[in-house]
Image 1 (cartoon, rainbow, N blue to C red):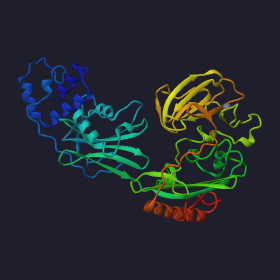
Image 2 (cartoon, protein in one colour; image 1 turned 180 degrees about the horizontal axis):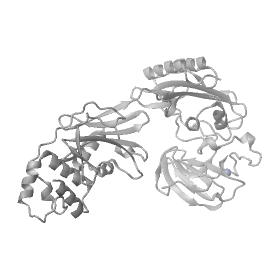
Image 3 (cartoon, protein in one colour; image 1 turned 90 degrees about the vertical axis):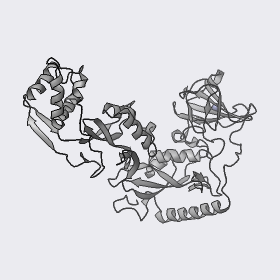
Image 4 (cartoon, protein in one colour; image 1 turned 120 degrees about the vertical axis):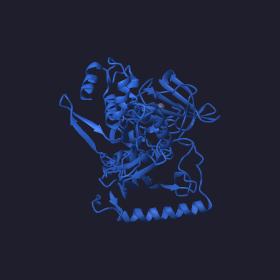
Length: 482
Ligand SMILES: [Zn+2]
């Protein structure tokens, strides 16, 4: 047999390592059967020749043991007890493994750009049928379309002479959460999820606005992502160019979730926030209604979402009007017919409301211009743009808050800014004077539940007091109030 192995290597340079493994199995498990096949073969038919596949298929081979999930340890390199290997030196001095039965191994691969789960399984010799079954089952816990480059995928494989069988497929869905499918005794896959324990800390921040809410928030230690979310939530009610004055105040309370090793999970949920603008306090609270819908509501229990945004541009990039010496910020007038938001070139411009693009292109002194029709009556228009977001053209439907364009300095301007108009039946109206109908209002039992939650969140915020404070339930190593 040793001679034949050597001869296989020399006469068939195209032979793949996998074929050699299969050959090893044939030799190890069914030596007699192989001998019988060889006996009937002609002398010039080399073993393992890829053009002679019949020689690799002995007439009778024991069925591989069905995989039974046992002894699995996440992060380990083996999830089945070592089935035992016999080794011997080959003629070339290499160690050749002669397995007794199915070999199980685990490997972790990083998702590459453009990869699909199917391709990853295919690359690792998992059969199409196994791959299809595993992915179909996985869909109940993980959407395969959400696979992203850099994510890690762990495969538990059982190799036998029958080929490669998928025993387990595990995806790190997000830090601390893993989705997996595992083959059961029946041969069918079942799906599941694993979570690391998550610690939730409640963080409270407050501060005085000097130049912008974003700058004040960052100074107080609020993360940029939370600040962006906060500014978007207030953009329905607040004109970030004209409404913010020096000395205005903000408060925000955030749930921050961390894994045992300190890794942050997500960006944290805003539970409560307030803006006190020229003495008037606007509040919003996060509330999940009976149907599971999460939204933010004001003091009266009305959704803060309105048909049109008051600030249709990334408010984080706006420095309030009071500091703008070189860019006279214009409000609405008969001559001007719109309001201006001084913003650096390239600042994301949001669709003020749901609607359909009516025009996207250069238009006279407006420079690059965009108009969205929201209802039969209302449209909004955006001027002096530096460019349009991908896919934006006439007839395209857009959602409120979607980035549709970028602010610029095109057309007749005095400096980089967004010119914003609200049109009612085609005529410009003063956006600062429009009273938007309030969003959904909570009522009855739902409203009572909301008001109870509101009172509880107010008490929590009051007990946390200062900026960066952490609820008492947090672990000892959490940041302290300062
Ligand atoms: Zn203007």
